Image (cartoon, rainbow, N blue to C red):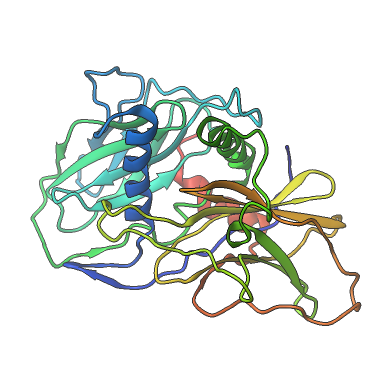
Length: 337
């Protein structure tokens, strides 16, 4: 699948009560889904360790001044590809504190040179850190815990999920889509996405706000059923949400891809500016439980034709447009190239 970058996402944030103040459920939700997949796909109730192999083991190193730390996965295989039979890469790395809270999580760009490495700021009130990594073909792995030398603080704020750290950079989109297509085949036995005839609740529908010049993707419809956005506050409760929404135009270009945060929202929705060269758009979504769905292909209305057709519903997980420079400014500093 070809690639043209036109938009990125802004994560929705809210405060949830779970002993500590947590700004987003996104990290704990993804963690819970990794545990679900580890059991379902690799028949393991726990992350793999160095006893299972060394290729995917994350190694955490605290900086000399204690202000930051790095996580390296020196043996990890990175094979970016738009071919579901070829793609092989580390999708995420995350770090837990001494109480099992996810204090940082980041996505990876499979096109980054060398082995996956991330630099993270040291969170306050943490005494111990444990690194984890998820590989699309090899599952969930855990490294050794490392003391931070810090002081325990049970009243701290957990900021994991804030900002752009869980958005895949545009160059990673073909590999992300290929991995989802692979899961569709391996898990659901289908070489193609499911459609509206299989489940309208899972179908992404595109409408247009012509005054604003934007396209709007909504999963399900207000007239029928809306897909739930049920996250996990504890990283254990099984979540059920739309993890990714992406749009392909009539030339085969992926014009936007957004990873949704389920925190405090009822709808899965995405708003973006269509590419000026596109004439038609088709939306796709991935449900963590029910797989890959495709919506109806729609024509992009000519400027001035018709009336506004939709509004983003309140309480929705949605994306907003950013410039090309904004995508890379937000995403590339996560990686050591």
